[in-house]
Structure formats: C-alpha cells, structure tokens
Length: 74
Length: 211
Ligand SMILES: [Zn+2]
Image (cartoon, rainbow over all chains, first blue to last red; front, side, top):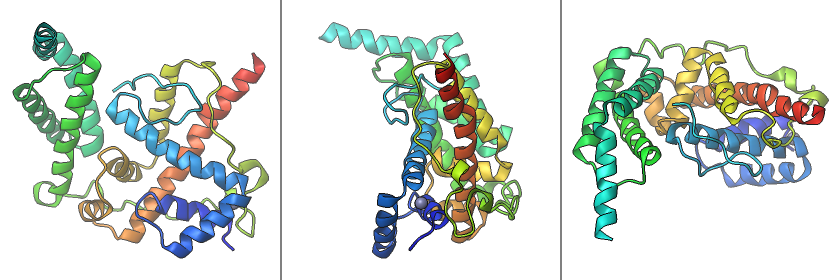
C-alpha cells in the first residue's frame, strides 16, 4: 500500500514519463480512497496547464473550476 | 471572401510593422527569454532571430493576441535550440548544482510518520471563487511563486514546463542524472503548489467567504 507521500512522488514522476503498470494500479487504488491525493493529482495537472498558458498567452487549457484566466502578463 | 483575407493579412503585417507594437512585444519576449536562458545576450539573439523569422513568414492572423502566441511559439523553439546546444555554446555553470540547492528539502513536514497527509496540509480542491480577486493578480502571484523557487530549480522547471524540453535533453543541458531531475521537478512542483495554494486559492476562498 502506497503512502500519500509516495503517491505525490509518483504523480510528479508521471508528468515526465508513463509509469509502470504496477505503479499505475497502486496509484489508482490509493486515489480512489484518498481525497487529499486526489486533489493533489488535479493540482499537478493544473500547474502544468498554468505553465502552458503562461507561455501561450491564450487560454485553452484550464485549471480553474469554470472561469477563464486572462492573458498572462508576458 | 477575398477582401477579408487581404484585410486580415494586412492587419498582421501592420502589427509587425507598427513600431510600438513590436517594441512592446520585444520587451515581453526579452523578459521571457532572459528568464529561460539566464543570459541577456543569448536572450537578445534568440529574440532577434524569432522576430526576423516572424517577419519573414507573415501570414494572416486573427489579431494581436494570435500574433503574440505565434511569435512566442517561434521564440520557444529558438530557446529550445539554444538550451539543447548549451554545452557547446556557453558554460553550464549557471545550472550546475541544481538539485543540491535544497537537498534537505523532502517535504516530510507535510506528512505524518506513516507518510499520510497531516490534517492541515491535506490538499483540497482548487477552484477560484468568482472574481473576488482581480484576474490579473493570478499571474502576479504565479510569477512571485516562481521567483520564490531556488533559481536553478526554477530553471529546470521552466525548461520542462515552459520550453517543454524532453527529460533527457534537460539532463544533458543541466548535466544531472535522471533521478536528480525527477527530484528537482518534484521539489519545484511541491513548492509551487504550496505557494499557489496559500497565496491564491486559499486567499481568494477566504475573501469570498468574507464578502
Ligand atoms: Zn493519499
């Protein structure tokens, strides 16, 4: 059973390369039961979306519940 | 239809020949390129190349915002080229030691002994309550959080998330192992997450509750 801390490490790593099947299964089980890590996962995706948007200047990927972000200041 | 096409081509061309627009664009590009490359002269060259490339390939656009996106995409490619050839063109000392800046930072304080989230540190959903804070502030907070990262960690994060280099390209440019890259990106994300959570998402939530 993965700890929340191990889950955060794996979730970050999953943004670099596909995880092994075993790791994906273990993650899936943990995320189904743990609200904190489930939110953490979404926040990791959000950060990547925000970074993209910062460079692209225009919104298509999003982060926030519904609202759109304005163009970044770059 | 023909008239529309000509009109929009002219608009783009006009933008690129409007001194004020180009100056503004150049200033923004220079800021971004310097941030990514950590070297003003390399940044100037990349911006110059990108602007020349843009002028050479002027096609029709929807307007100023689309033009900016397009020019930044060209700039991003130029920056990626410079970073990939970094070992040949400049010394990498500005990147050496990335990962060692905060080697003791393991974020253990967020977790209990078994590695579970501490009650107060457990992430909750990010969700902006309707414009309780001005949207422009979002990017101010984001930039401030980026600035708060240890500098080399920030560079690695930007190579990955802004310039979208592959992991092996970053390892080569920064001369670090893949494991150190994973750790460095993890630390950067943990810090950014915490900073954005504290300074934007929770703040705007409290603001909304108060009003
Ligand atoms: Zn968990």
